[in-house]
Image (cartoon, rainbow, N blue to C red):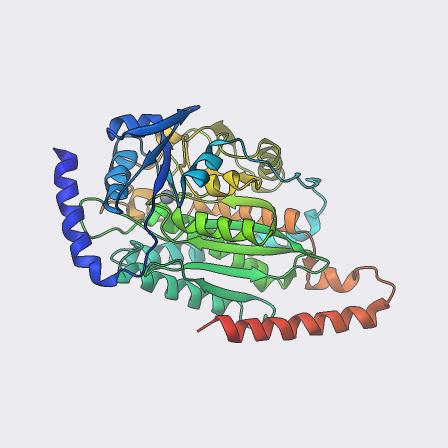
Length: 424
Ligand SMILES: [Zn+2]
């Protein structure tokens, strides 16, 4: 009955939101954990290793499955949406993983120069502003407004850095995914991704503050962006920071991006997903999810925690499609998911009106640890240095410093052009 009531409310709200709908592609197949499939009484076409393929007729089914994945299994996301049966089958096969990069920690000077500039008041302020929005539901006007708000925020952080671009990625819903790019110098074709999801959801009421889920993750990556750019940090690899739309309804925003990157052969060397960072529910600080993540990169992440974060960590699992790291993992890209607690100890107020900052003690004391980790991850995987470090040791090239400065000027000009084209 609980779900029937919830479904009536969902259907009503969908009618109310119909005017906001874009030309959304109709999903055809889902891959979903067999536990969620059984609880939702879904007719499964086939199952493999705890994952089922399900054919769905209309979008409304996604909301019903969301309700069960969220309420009974506390999974954020919980399933993946596919355009074709072939794509659903491909999602069941073990991914062909990109060769993992060298994980040697050798940028301590840069990391230790940037870490002290992290500011938990700034991080807290961003969570407060995001969670003050009535909802960030991906089909709502509020969800759309959250995208433009975040893009404007990231653009302000990039003031004085014409090489940095901010893009609103239209995926067919009112809410857009937001992508900030710091272009690399030297290994620009290799991409490092840090992300969280921008949307929030509440299956019973219109209000969905989503302070922990996942304003905390978006605010954490925003604080990483702030200190990297304020420190005049320039990576060798390209760094992209992403706030995904529509995570709560089948990881759809991140899946669209991964699909596009696969098509364009974008070489993503590593992905860090931050989904819920500000509720300390367990004895240890940071919990790495072992399932649907890359073991070698997870070891790199635990080395970063031991070296730079000064936090304790543990290992756990969160089930099928629990957040956007699963989209990247399925695409064959090394991904990690550091989480706020052991999965069973995570914030129980998510997906409700009560997911507010009060649940986290009205501070960002836990999330700041993840900001330290994200900063270290960006620098040790992106390499490069801050302004002074770079000036002291320019990349070696046969053309000498003259050619190097010309290249910098060129990059700046390209960045300016991209900015004008992309940012409205
Ligand atoms: Zn989430």
